[in-house]
Image 1 (cartoon, chains in turn purple, yellow):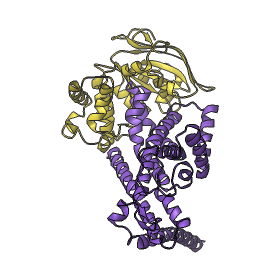
Image 2: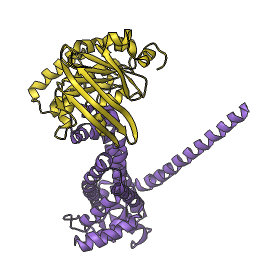
Image 3: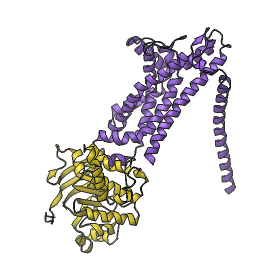
Image 4: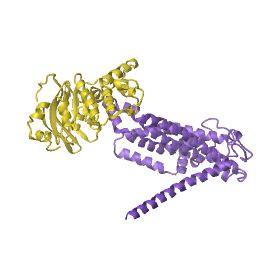
Length: 285
Length: 256
């Protein structure tokens, strides 16, 4: 009996270790492939100049700028909206039909394929509101796409704030709203930032929604305003890899593009992780 | 239970009933709580003593499905009347909880939290913080490190910080909900000394499941059982000469 239990434990641990090893291996292989192939292409010129000669030469500057635009604009819209919605749902909404319906809607939104968001953005932002193929249309579409992620993460974060903090504040004769503003939200910031990080990765990586709402097949200049068309890194990569004039010749550029995209997402995540740890330290120490 | 207290009555409760949904948790409670003294609520777990305490600053309002009937008058004002501002009431009736619950902020900011939100001017805040910490018997231990997180303090210090935080809002009444149940005996002693000092300026109500504690610090004791107030009187009388059989059984440790 005894040795049997020990054996079982060994098998279970080994399986867990193998699973973990596989995950790490895949990540490392992908990273190795992209870095080793893309490293040589990266140069100051590559990230500061526009593509030339049918995208077979030159850099990816417009795509970098486009991606940064998308991240910024969609976050400006989605972050406040998502956090406010989460605050309402966790702190104010009474359990009932409306709340249930809203929760269901958010869950379904989270499970909707991104191309459907693209079609919605095309119909509503591009056509109905007349924003045209533009950064604005694409950012609004992406904002909708990440809204459920931000709402869910913020809700989780708000719910983990101990009841004791709220009671302590209310018992001092502080209103509910001040309690939320001064105690609950600061304590929830690490979790909210985590949601934001996840959604930045999504915004930077999505192709289908922006393909339908504003990304141009070939856009060698910088977008002039939020009403301009643009190109972004994932879409540029898609074009290079599938529809370019000379796919084989652009392969190094493809790797370079992928590497830059990876670095942007990683960079933004690092900043967010820094912010999160900063607040977490403040909360714990 | 007539109004014959030396300092007068602070809290007068008449015919209070409380339901959690369909569960009738408090039955027809009537009690007068005297000013500037310590009143202890004792009774076995689940007897309703904490629930009743939370009626006195309307913390039960936060619980969905909780319904209250009856009169609660604090200093002559019916606190369940429609035109009472609950936020204002809770300023007047402070509360210290079972588990020390300082905010994840510095010691200074914990104390300054209430006064700041209530619009006290910036230059007055430091004086209020110092005064509250002195009154909370914590100033000597923390005056040189006001900027460190309150969560770095020991449990007993945290609880005194919570008391000081309540004092900073200048309440009339302070409700203590088993304030020492998570503390060691030395910290408990410090809190008890503090409570005895505070009764000069405040009316104090304390829920405790520690009968020795009730006997040590309270002037009056109320015994609750299964949602009923069984007996209320001077602490000496309750412990030495209880009128009710149930009180005697509980105090002599026959159940609890």
